[in-house]
Amino acid sequence: MYRCTDARGQVALRDSPCSEGHRQEVRTMIRPIDAAPAPRPPRPTPSAEPAVAPAPPQVVVVRPPQPMYRCVRPDGSTYTSDSSAGNPRWVPLWTLGYGPPQRGPSTRIGVEAGQGGGRVDVDIDAGTRRGWRGGYGDAGTWVRDDCSPLPQAEVCSLLADRREQIRRRFFNAQPSERARLRGEETTINARLGQDCGR
Image (cartoon, rainbow, N blue to C red; front, side, top):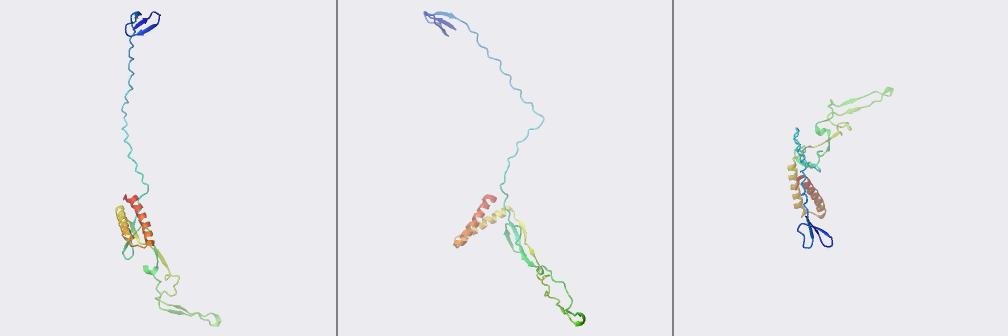
């Protein structure tokens, strides 16, 4: 370093020699020394436990696909339904093979009622259901068709087929029927989009 002092006594420090007319002093400075490097943090030692694999991505299902069922009527014909209830209907018991208990031949019963000689006759008709009202003749039960769920691929195919039938029918339909067909197609489109990805 050069310490330069001019005629007025002002001092300037420079890294080059002083100009003429300045008093010059040379001073040696101690060069700074770099600090020792900081120690590196220790590497983590491998643990005995195995590394935990990342969890697989979660799939969130908003709603499971709506099922569809194939139902079989007593005559063997089939139909599809969104319910497994199977078209409940009331049938008399005699259609299922139940009937009134068997009786013997017709019988006339007479009863003497005291001294007045009164008589009561009861007629039992064998082989008919007359006189059995409230018994097997009017009795019945609810029966349902057998229904089984369809595979989802078949459900999607049936829905797509029904949508095409609606579209073909739409052009020849009356305005009141068109409104019903439009509503049904909207429902099928929503179901195809959500359950079948179509």
